[in-house]
Length: 291
Image (tube, rainbow, N blue to C red; front, top):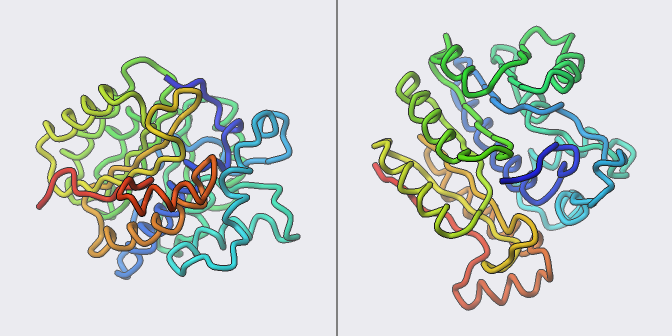
């Protein structure tokens, strides 16, 4: 499992991958005027100071958001996410990184609602202080998996659920799968987005089998790799499972990842391009379960 406080990892490749896709999922919900509910089960503190000693320890943002936030060739699909990052850095110097709560709040409309869950009491208080003046946003110090039971289905009957576990406990894949299956039974029409790190191949195969065994249909699997498959020193990549993705989101995601993957490949972007030319892609978009 991963040693975890997100301040150490803010703005890294996994955040870029996850948050760019999250922005597109939220915008897709806005194609209808009806309100939606966004639930973030592992919300963190919302906004991260990249000059903090924890963030500077490994400076993971330098191989993540720092590579893309001012890139002149960023495609339109990436723009809403990058706009959210730039809004927190108006001077043009990268000092802050917005987590999923800030991105979701920036994109929400007056009629929409956000629920943020954070288990760490101090982090939950920081998060609550950040949104204290916005009545559309509620913050609760609680276990995110338990919150799924209490808050679903939402009164809006449409929405997006981000389950972004820290993976700092044993058997987290099992816990994630069980919580996801139970939540889906309560809110089968909702969009679910499950983030996960790429671990050893046996663990990943077991996780996929467990997800398929839930019987849930329409699950899109997105993955990105920034190290070779035999890399063991740190996280080599990550993925997002999206249940009930909006129409056309698979094509949108493929376009986004085709642009992001070479930039985020840890060793040399040219290596990623070479791997792709040999059909050894550093990203993957596929249906884990179909219609």
